[in-house]
Length: 389
Ligand SMILES: [Fe+2]
Image (tube, rainbow, N blue to C red; front, side, top):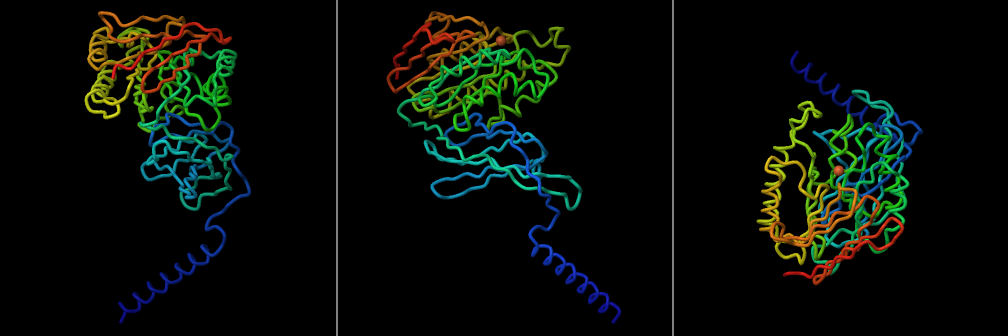
């Protein structure tokens, strides 16, 4: 009898709880929602677009959680990130979209919802802000032609960035590729936006993607370890490949220019094992990637044209590039233009882009052309490579 009363009491408490829940849900929000919206202060912009994925990055003035609303032929998909089961709350937002169709046009809005106070239960919320709708088109391994614009070593000079961005024909370029050393070293989030991303994103807009190859200067400074959060890739890595129709583009990270045990790094660098992992990944591309095998051109883009500091001085990388039939290696780092045709040591064209120069790369199934211009638009060099395949 006593047990029955306890059971009945439990049932009543349970019903009461359900009733409370029901009342709360019936109201507009089951938690406190203040009349405050976040302001989108930076972006959104597209990072490391591929044929099936992209990372969208933006900032808000106040802690918020984020999602991307994706419009696809009248269907709406909302992509909300989670890390270890929790929705990230902060001012820097990254939403990676996967499962996209190649060569397809999408529109998107970046949406941020204010989190006023992150209490353990019943956090205080605010309202949402959305960016204006913007469109983008995924890359397509089968697209007939591709065009991308390349800059390098902008080194915090916003006037330089402005001059170069004006030379980009945005209606005809599929992507902006930055070959690294956007900075002298990394100190803060504001530096990252003020000295590079803000003027770059202003020119690029929310619909053209940025592809970034890390330079040696980007491994330095107190904020270097946070950089990946501002140039995110769907792969979560600074090295990646893109299937750009006739071009298989491999963006590499050449890391530092001095050995890990150089005193200036105070034993805080371990680039040697990192580069071994990267080389293993590159071997995988060469050995088993279908687009690599079929593409008319195999292009490597990276910061240091000599592969950066490596214990073997890059011998394994050069051997792999020769064996893999790489057509073009495009890099920066030297701050001056140079070009070397294939020779007995390097079986590929090597083009080093200067600091105040823009390269327009265009390729069809037959020809790859690199036009290098000064920051005033004067021609520096035109390289034309016929396909060997
Ligand atoms: Fe450099």
